Amino acid sequence: MTSAKREPVLLAWLDAITDRVGHAIAWLVIAMMLVQFAIVVLRYAFGMHSIVMQESVMYMHAMVFMLGAAWTLRHDGHVRVDIFYRRLGARGRAWIDLCGTLFLLIPVLGFIAIGSYGYVRSSWAILERSPDGGIPGVYLLKSLILVMMALLLIQGIAQLIRQWLIIRHRLPNDTPTHEELL
View 1 (cartoon, rainbow, N blue to C red):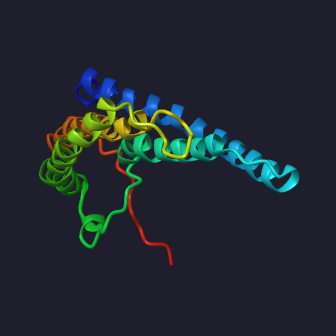
View 2: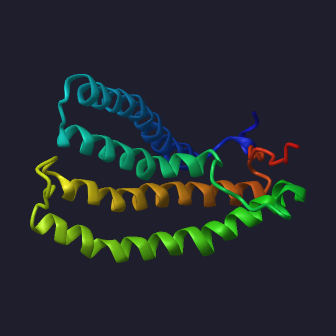
């Protein structure tokens, strides 16, 4: 690869953050399945019930979705209504992605972060616990909202850099093609 086409260090570093979090979170899916299996076996085979185990599945599920959102964005796994997108060249797709990130993703992230900050802060102020006697860290679960916003912002910045470099012909387009399968 020529030096003009090499991925900038900042872009590689931002993508690496997202990839590391995504790979770590993927292991939670296995843990979540094992805990859910144990819940079912304990309940139906032994008549035992654990609120903590049930809540732990909810916590892991929330972590997978909230902390995996940036990884999904990084790997173009989000839902796309591509009436025109698939017909465009690399630069046209890059312009759409750049505008979508600037005018949709980043403002929505800001809105959610600002709107949820008081919600998370008040949960921390009382060290909110489960009302059912389960996991005593509801405030930690609610904090994932802000962590999700931060991770999506990191990936959004990486997307802006990547799309700008594609537009300027300084990076090859590695965006997957989106074709309908009939």
